[in-house]
Image 1 (cartoon, helix red, strand yellow):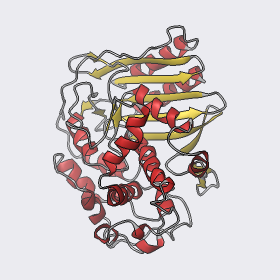
Image 2 (cartoon, one colour):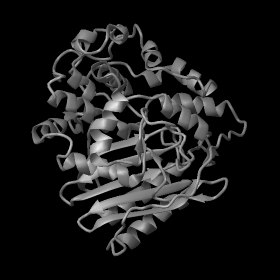
Image 3 (cartoon, helix red, strand yellow):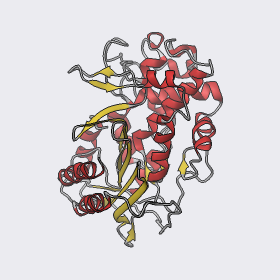
Image 4 (spheres, one colour):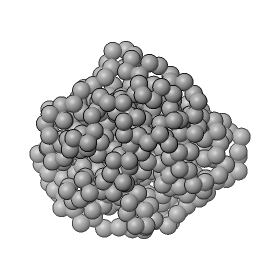
Length: 388
């Protein structure tokens, strides 16, 4: 999701006019998924994904699961420089979609009786971390999950953005993120309203570390393995993010419609994020996760009801559950999450009335404004129109 972080990035780009290129190896891949070649919406959806790529996005990919079964398509490039074609088997950056996985992990602990969602986070979060948060004892675990905590946003702090851009190889730690907001007051009384903050999910990851020893391993054991997500990777896997089938990432650094390769910065940034980001997966694996969640393979019906209990935005519209976003696209109501970063963007949603799951991914940054986004958004709407 966009924040003031975008403004700082834009200021940096406008004051640095040298050509930026930081590509990484990217290989061709072959999908082993069984795809329905007779999918009735293939022509319209495929045309929309091609239009997405033609809008200026380096590459785009789509995965759909419906009553007709699985279907995927792609267009453009996983890496422009050597014309590696984008394929459905390429790993995509899930960005903030990782928050849904993190929320499921916390809710697994709730079902195991290890977490009370309405207890202060300080009951579980070590003092080493809670000391950075003003009035930490007022903030419950549920408030972190639905973004009603009032905790300040770390990634909108100028000191963080400066370090990220001037030292792209800097090895950030979770405690570093908390230090950027140390001593800052809460932006509102906990529980009084909703405001999306990445910091909330960093705190949830640290809380889960304290309860399980390693939140990434816990996510792997309780989500990836039971659902058979063999093409989904997080921090506990060997060689994390050093995958030849991981897409290269691009940005419109100067907001002038010209893309540059930002893969090294993108990868290093994502590698340092916990809870709020950090997962890469193939489109089909991403859909398998949401499908498994919605089909009750991860959480009980009662817990899912809590996950889908929405808090409202300032306009009184449903804005967020426990790691889930309610959305309406082209008149169709869905649940899931979106994600955006320096060099990638994606959406993962389930539309219950239609019984359709959709993943759309691009390897173009979405956290800063770009004239390319106009065409991207129009083509994205056509994708949903086609599959829904």
